[in-house]
Image 1 (cartoon, rainbow over the protein chains, first blue to last red):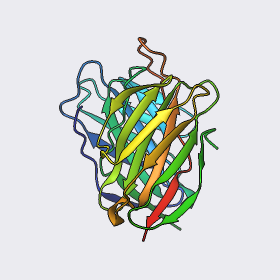
Image 2 (cartoon, rainbow over the protein chains, first blue to last red):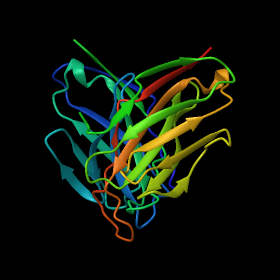
Image 3 (spheres, each protein chain N blue to C red):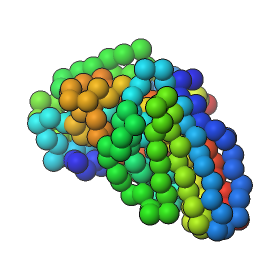
Length: 112
Length: 118
């Protein structure tokens, strides 16, 4: 599984756009990039997944450059409730045997 | 609400004891995964079951075991408990159709069981 590197923590203010970048230099051809969000004492929650270029859903956008060695999770206009840990995961998304390897994540603190 | 349920929510027990954690996956999901999250180790994958059969194994101790029943619910059994087993235990489920590569095979996590070993 490709190793990921992301900042340990980030601070932001309400209403700002937050971009969290994840490095995955050893990403393989079949690997997808997936981001999860976790609030204290809760299970991780799927945010977004992509393979290349840009993916957008109602919660976030995911930008993946052509070489796919990094990816950026973009959260538009964050609120206090976006304070959480964000995990970047890289790996094949096969149906079976699809275990997730979580790194340390990025602890986002949104301030008023 | 992810649709994955876990019981109990909290569990307090003593060293040397045995406990069983239960997980009911989302309706239609065939795969169940167990993860352990402790303060010093982060989120660690333990084991996966697919349609009743063990499919993948991670950092699961020999004192721990799991199974998935015909109705697809799963149980994680922890025995000879030690202080270091205190953690949050999460169950996740996914559709996980065997043999197919699904780019949207998202894992949905339950609320977790907090185990405290005294």
